Amino acid sequence: MAEVEAEQPVQVGVSKPSGVPVGAYDKKCIFCKIENQEMGTELLHSDEELSCFRDIKPGAPHHYLVVPNQHVGNCKSLGKEHVPLVKQMVEVGKQILQRNSVADLTDVRFGFHWPPFCSVTHLHLHVLAPASQMGFMSRLFYRLNSYWFITSPFWCLNSLTEEDVRSVMARSVCAKSAFELWGRGRTHSELRTSLLNYSPEKMSPYVHKESTYRINVYTFNKTLLFADRIKKIDALEYLPFEGTVSLKSPQHIFCLLEDYGTDPNNIPEHPNYVYFGRWIADGQRELIRSHSVKSRHFIGNTSMDAGLSFIMTNHAKVKENDLVFDPFVGTGSLLVACSHFGAYVCGTDIDYNTIHGKGRSSRKNQKWRGPDENIRANLRQYGTQKMYVDVMVSDASKPVWRNAALFDAIITDPPYGIRESTRKTGSHKDIAKAPDGSYADSHVPVSQAYNLSDIFADLLHFSAQHLVVGGRLVYWLPVYRPEYCEEMIPHHACLQLVSNCEQTLSSHTSRRLITMEKIKEPKELDGLAGAPDPRCSPYHGHNAFREKYFSGLNKRSSKEDTRADVDGK
Image 1 (cartoon, rainbow, N blue to C red):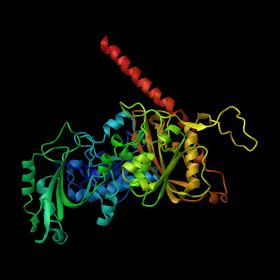
Image 2: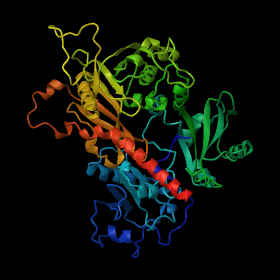
Image 3: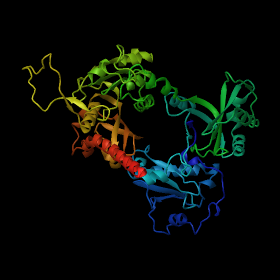
Image 4: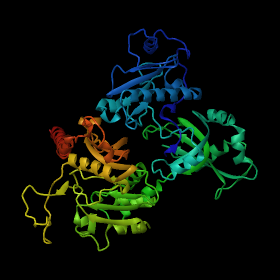
């Protein structure tokens, strides 16, 4: 369950008092000495409440510790009164990262080590970035969803109206549900105290005599028997509900949420944290099932997963009546997702057979594609055929569009040379042309290799020319993880980087979802003086991705073969 509730640092367990009173100075505590400037450690941040300094054993290129100036024990010492403190620690961590040129706050890891896995019993928040560059041991020590490094499936949002939440949930395929939080605690006793302290004025519109309601019980990482769920609902009798219970069509739905951690092999008897709130809206995770490529009419070897397609669509802010273009359209998975939100869609691809739905099928037990397997049929399957503009065979390196801002969004997944080859038309040989520069009708274009660096340079240049100002480019960039750095991200003077998110493919490869927004027209660059931005030069290291990808596979295979030989001796 991915309910919209709770920030990572808030996930604390059973409270245990530390040996030192909260707020006291512990002369034996090294962190107390550091923040008191007794150790000569450089403080990157220091105010009345918090200090920040570098970790002595960094687990990432940027690894900082944020600590309260007053002595607070480990995370087991935290109570609900410490929530503002923890939130402030997170904000300081973000500020330090931004001050040290870490722009991508999606590739960051925050968290606390759970006793006995913390070496210093002074509360300290680990701030690591980029998380994608953490080594093997660091990924183990700061592992997400582990019982020693605290994370959570819940996320707490503040300062949002109910209308804001509904608009987000109407698009999100990542969040499951959103609730108005009425109370929370580490135990049901603490939850009761929290709920009884909740504002009666905020409760009254939903608990009066004329209202109808239902209470659901949701658990994360544990399944409860029906009888146990009923007992937990009955235990909420202290709530001032005066309305009538309606299981089929209630006016208001309330939920009791229990978090049993993230380790399926070590499920606690009692929840780590419990929440109670009023249901506001569900997310759109049903789209992942209804648009699954398993049930899609027309698919190929590289058809994009439905969930990722909708995530890319949201990154591009696709909306009704937008015109969206995919220059590497393939079987049109991205067009399907965009059309769902009311956008007109079109695309191109160099592969004639894919565009026309011909050739061998990608389905099991089916040799050839059927007569109606094409992108238009996919949109027809989901009732969005009216949003289909057209697709055509075209070379992305030689755009056929007039020079104008045409598209509200460009969304694509370029080929990496793994399952699909990187090709463009052209030849190293001289091919005779007619005097007017045209080819004969019988001419068949010759294709040649299309380097990844050129693909991304052409894609950014095309987007700068053909996106409207404020329009977005969203695409996948494959990277070899041991060599990744932010300088690998292609840049263009007309496009501003909005986000950079990683999807791990293997221990040595991943791909990054890059979102860019057009901020100016290319003609505005003509009047700019000075040297060109060196970041806008193509990064040629991408060209060796295919070799590095298979090199990593071969190394892993050889290791497995060696291990098998050793085991057999």
